[in-house]
Length: 179
Ligand code: 5GP
Image 1: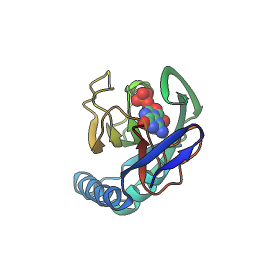
Image 2 (image 1 turned 90 degrees about the vertical axis):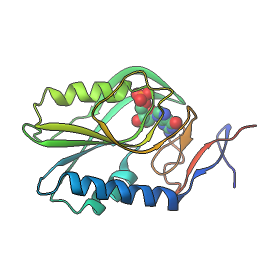
Image 3 (image 1 turned 180 degrees about the horizontal axis):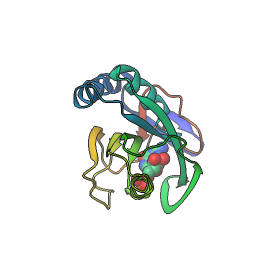
Image 4 (image 1 turned 135 degrees about the vertical axis):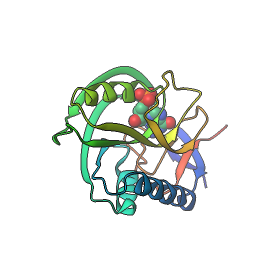
C-alpha cells in the first residue's frame, strides 16, 4: 500500500521479512568472521538504529556498542558538508571496528567517518551497510565488506531511514513511487 509523507508518495520496496532474513545472514557472516574477537560496532545515527539493534543481537559476539552522529543531509540530497554532532566515546585504539550504516549513497559520509576513525589507530575497520547505491557512490571502499542490498539510485525510507524526520519507524522499506 502506498503512503504519503509530506509532499511525497512512497511505495513498498523491501518488505520486513526480506530485510529480516538478510540481516540474519549478515549477522551469521560477521559472527563467523569475528569469532573469538571483541569488535566494536559503531552505529551511525540516526538511520542505523533498527539495523544496528537487529544485527548486533544476532551476532551474539562479546562486542561493544557505540554510536556516532554526523550531519550532512537535508531533504533528499547529500550536501557533502559534514559535521560531528555526537562523537565516539569508546577508545578505538587497537580495536576491531565495524561501522554500521543505514545506507551508502554518494559515499561522502562514510569517507569522512573512515578518516576520523583511522586517526584513532584501530586494529581493523570494516563497514556493514544495510543499503548501498552503487550508481550514486563516488568512492570505492575496500572496507565495505557487508552489504544488505544493492539498490538503484532511488530515495528510500523506513526501517530507520527518514524523509524530513518522518517514516523511520516503518517496518518495511519504501521507495519514492513512480507517478
Ligand atoms: P552519502 O554521504 O553516502 O551520500 O549519504 C549518506 C547519508 O545520506 C545516509 O546515512 C542517509 O542518512 C542519507 N541518505 C542517502 N540516501 C538516502 C535515501 O535514499 N533515503 C534516506 N532516507 N536517506 C538517505
